[in-house]
Amino acid sequence: MLVKRVQHIAEELAKENYKVVVIGDTNHPEVQAVVGCADDVVVIADESDLHKLPKNARLGIVCQTTQTPEYFGRMLGAIGNSGFSEMKVINTLCREAIKRQESAVQLCRKVDVMFVLGGLESANTRKLAELCKKENKLTFHLQNWNELDINTLFGKNIAGVTAGASTPEWIIDEFVKKLEAL
Image 1 (cartoon, rainbow, N blue to C red):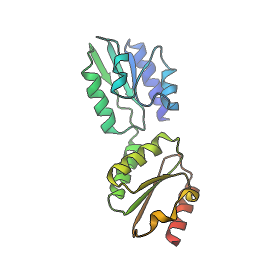
Image 2 (spheres, one colour; image 1 turned 120 degrees about the vertical axis):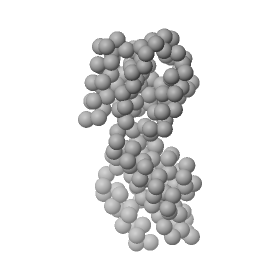
Image 3 (cartoon, rainbow, N blue to C red; image 1 turned 90 degrees about the horizontal axis):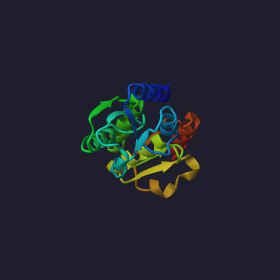
Image 4 (cartoon, rainbow, N blue to C red; image 1 turned 45 degrees about the vertical axis):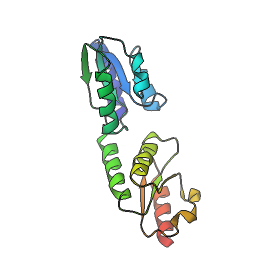
């Protein structure tokens, strides 16, 4: 639903003669879907991509829904310094993803060890793990219980568990039950 919204916004920006700019991971399926909605969309993953922006253009900017507000803001600042005639920004960040990220970061500050469950290729799960690792060096991104090295639990009293949006509930339940059994 959110991805369709971003695609629709990109189409509208293009119709309004804005150069459509997507802030996000070039290879992410969501970003690729948005790229397909308008002609000559520019994807900005980091500051090294700023050279792709046309000078003095009318920029219509959206963001991959699973990115953090900090990343979105940082990239908007960088784009703002690159030279444009007009910039229209639509906040397309997913509120649920942001809440999940904030909750995970709060939790990982309170635990001895943190586990982020979900696919290694999942952008939102990788982002969760990355954010948690900044706050708690003992953060581990695992796909399931079988990937857990039991040694990481020795000497730890409190473990935190979070998961990416697409992680099946049964994987989370199994992990928590087995963790509690230890």
